[in-house]
Image (cartoon, rainbow, N blue to C red):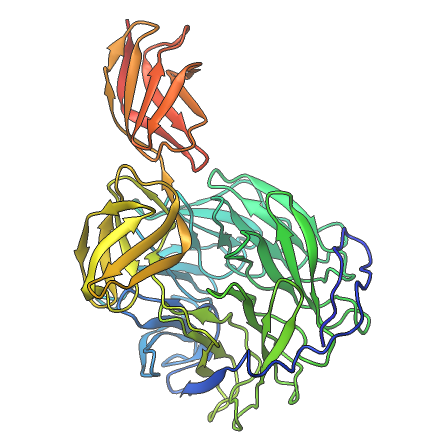
Length: 535
């Protein structure tokens, strides 16, 4: 059943309307579920952590047990269910199970075990421990994520860290997060990374926080263990339509003394937590995996319990408040094999949904399943960072890409090089501005990304590179749209004009000294490699 509510404002929710029947729309929400692979503990079992699409079109993940040492594995699975164990975790690496991140700089996977940060090269099938956390650091909260600066960020214990891929160095950052993180961070379109903690806050019910690439922490919302929920123990996600943050709380909520959990929405940048959905016990309880923000604008997720078999459900939720129970997990057999999912559903670029359960299936060790949405959306994606810079080669992932004849960043055409049917390499054009990425096939079909690319500023040269105060200087590069500041040697220019995304005309200000030129935009900042000489 669905209950529509007003916003929380940290207080008890009021019902905005009576109970509505929300499960009767089968023709509009017709779905198909298929168990593609049943895990067994001779190879990896009890899969845990995120699934991720590789550039070869296969999906990659980790299991938390099974394998040669019963400490879990890294695995690859095709879209038809062909399964391959790639690496067995051992006593040196630590137990696996957090999932993987595909990094844009070197195209390697990165992840964490119970005590290490590791790199896995899928081409060479090579595993390497990059950093071993100390016993006092705590346990890593899932794999790191890539920030807009192309470094990897994560949390171990309550301490955020930065891993610089180019130098293979890890730095523990000084500002702690407000509690025990409940999963990996989420890199949002505003350039910040967001996370939730299972505890912390003034009522120890959990808190949402924000991390910048400089290591600054901002506490955004403390849960009250009332209608907003408590103990959010899954990663956050971002709405495709509105750019707000969405997540789930494992317990709390309006019903049955707050034991069933909630779906919540946080508007950005206001940081207000608004009305979502309160699980009521009739259609799934206690979500633990987080939400998929799908191409159709709706959200899909799972619960760890509830449903007709008390083994969890798959659901669809719409931001207007409508909740649809799609499938009840049926355990080791039945129509929907699987149970107790702890992994968020993911959407492949073919428009199909894929997921994992940690138990159930023929062997009771978990399943890899697919779900066909009502209207699959074929799309492309970027590997693996939506913040890009002029002349940077960007990997575009999708299907049928050997037939691409044009690539556009927004309305600007880009040079590209075919890779395979599942990826190509494109260069960010100097005139590009923030917007969707589009590829055009020889058939004339256009396929878009579901997220916008964000162009980071870059200065390539200064014309002229010297002159007195009052000199007009052409700052050449890219990503200049939305420039908010230009500075010479640290002194802000009072007069500048963004002629195009690739050119700024700025006047050397009074007080300027010899030094670098800096451009600041809404996406970030850039400094010139050459020095401007004030004479």
